[in-house]
Length: 117
Image 1 (cartoon, rainbow, N blue to C red):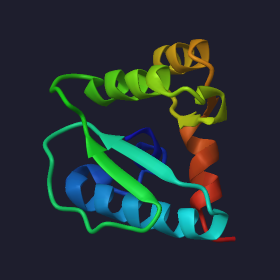
Image 2 (image 1 turned 180 degrees about the vertical axis):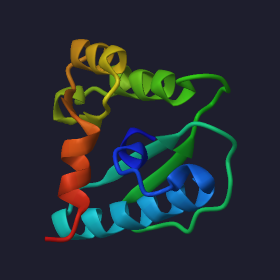
Image 3 (image 1 turned 90 degrees about the vertical axis):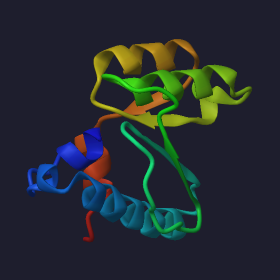
Image 4 (image 1 turned 30 degrees about the vertical axis):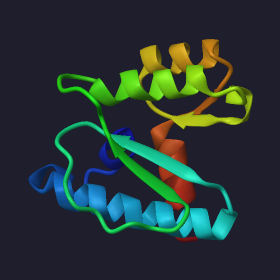
């Protein structure tokens, strides 16, 4: 949601549509770079068209920052965590995943990578 929220385009009026749009953008990114992407959304699961190279998950619990917990757990469980980059603007999540070996990239910086040149 940090990436979605980094562009004030009215996404808050239709959160599900914004999530679908982000997954489409991530699909183009994965195709162009060859980098696999996992996105974990807060909130209830809903239908999102699958995109090659993009794994879409929803937080395993509810509440504020629920996806952050799942992201941190996945990084900690990954034996190659030093090869992961977590996109977040949340300082607490960034600190957690960096302690586990992952790199971080701010949502705004990643958003600029998604934008067509």
